[in-house]
Length: 134
Image (cartoon, rainbow, N blue to C red; front, top):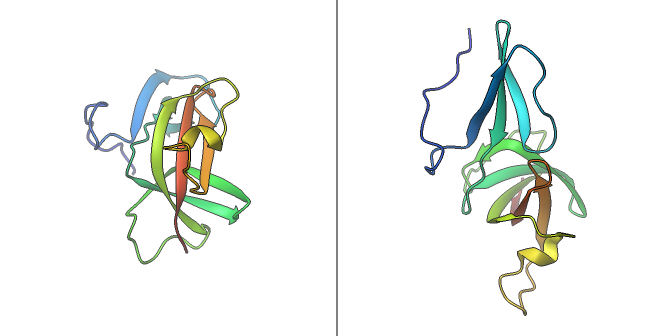
């Protein structure tokens, strides 16, 4: 039977998922949220993103779907077949109004091909760049 891993502090680089609540009912949904059911109890989970880590993406390069709850070694030689890209997290910011990938630029002349997602109730802007194709 699956059981949750041992806890770590949420403010460490080892934390990638936070239990945001425990309920017998429904958990909030959306990008960056999910749940883990154990018997009759739902653990409501919120994803914690860290700059420098990598996640997975799938789809065409102009329409990439984020594997929100994935985590992968950036230099992994193999990734699950359902994914097409390793994405390097370059920024995790409080989402500004009208957030877009332009908010991910590190300087005025930065021409990096960023991909940006609004996660966790659209409150967090997650910036990534392509690390490599599968």
